[in-house]
Image 1 (cartoon, helix red, strand yellow):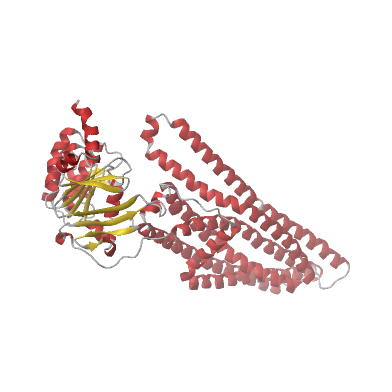
Image 2 (image 1 turned 180 degrees about the vertical axis):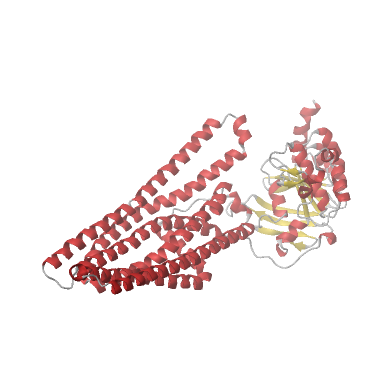
Length: 595
C-alpha cells in the first residue's frame, strides 16, 4: 500500500487550524468570558497601583522640607495593600478558570480522537504509519494542552493589561505615551518578522516527530528481523538522518523563537531610556505637568507595558507549536470516515450462512482495481477454500467479506441481506476469524479467551482449551485461567495460535474465516487442532485460505483466484479433472514432495 502524501504546511493552513481550535473551545465561552472579566479586574488593580504610587511619592516629596503627612501616607499605603491583594485574588481566579477550561478541552479532544479512530476506514491506517498516528494522539495533543493551559491564560491577562496600560499612559502623559508606543512598534515589527520565518520550522518539527516515531515503532516491532538480517547499521543510519533533520528544524525553531524575548527586552530598555531623557528635558524646562512622582509612575506603566509584550512574545512561540499540532490533529479529525450504516441487523443464532458474491469490484485505490469481477454462490455449511498465487486477492476477499473495506462495485450478501445494509458490528459478529498473525492482549488467560463475550462458563473454557490442546499448559500456570499474560510471557507462536483458535471456538459464530490458521503450529499439534477445526466447521460456512493439502483437498468448494478474478471453482476432484490452473498449482506444489 502506498503511504499517504503529506501536504506541505503553510502559514494560512496553520492559522486556519488554530482558529478551528478556538472554535472547538466554543462550548466553554461563558467560563472564558468570566475569566476575561476577572483578568480585566486584576488588570485594573494593577493599573491603579502606579497612580497611587505617584501620590505616595508626591506626599514624600512635599514633606521632605516641612514634614511628611503620615495620615495621608498611611491611607495611601493601606489602599495599595488592599488593591494588590484584590488583584492577586482576581488573577488567581482567572488562572484557575482557564486551567480548568483548558484541561476539559484537552480531555474532550482526546475523547474525540478516540471516537474518530474507531470510525476511520482501514485504508487510513494502511496509508499512515502507526508511529505518526500515535504522535498525533499523544505528542500533538500534549502540545495543544500545554499551550492552552499555560500560554492562553497568560495571553488573556497580557492583552487586558496591554490595553489598560495604554489607556493609563495616555492619561498620564501623551508625549511619553507616544514615545513608548513608537519603540514598541519597532519591537512588534521585529517580532512578527521572526514569527514569519520560524513558523515553517515549527511545522517541520511536528511532522518530523511523527516520522521519527513511525521509524522507531517499525524498527522495534520488527526487532528480530533487523537482528536476523544484520540491519542494525542501516536502521541506525536511517534513524540518525531523521534525528538530524529533527535536530536541525528544532534548533532553528527554538533559536528564532528565542530571539523574541531579547528583542522585547531591548525594546523595553530603549523605552525606559527615552522616557527618562524626555522627562528630564520637561522637568528642566519647567513643565509643571511632569513631576518626579509622575515620571516614576510613568516608568512603572512602561514596565507594565513591556511585560505583556514579552508575555505575548513567549505565548506566540507556544502558539506556533500549537498551530502546527492543531493542523495535524484536525487533519486526522476531518479525515473521511466510514460510510453511514442502516439499521438492518442479523441475529447470529438465526443466520444459516449462505453467502453470495455478486460481481464484486474493489481496489485499495479507486484508480487501481485489483478485484475485477468476483462472483460466487456459497451455501450453508460448505467449507470453502480460497487458493491462488501470492497477490491474487485471497486475503482481500476476506477483508471485503468482513466489511473492513467498502466495495467499489457489486455486492456481498449473507442470507440474502447485503452487508452494505448491515451495521459493521453486525457483520463482524457473524464471523469467527483466525489469522496467521496472532495477538494476545495484556490480561489474564480468561480475559484473552473470552474477549468481548459475556456469560462464558468454566465448562465452556475447559471444552475449548481441551479441543486445541491447551489444557495441560493452563494447568501448569501458577493461577490457571487467572494468570496474567503480557509481553514478558514466554509463549511460542504456536501457543498463541492455540489461544486464538480457542477464542473462536468460544465465540461460536455462524461463519468462520481461517487465514493460514495452522501455519505456526507443529505437525503433531496440527493433528489435534485439525480435529477441533473439523468440529468447528460443522454446520457453518467456513472460508479457508491455506496452502496445506489437509485444508484444501477436503473442501466442498475451492475458489481458484488469479489476478483478482475467480478463474476456476469446484471441489478437488473436479478441478484436477479440468487439468487447468488449479491442477498446475497443485502439481507444482506436491510433485517435489512426492519425488
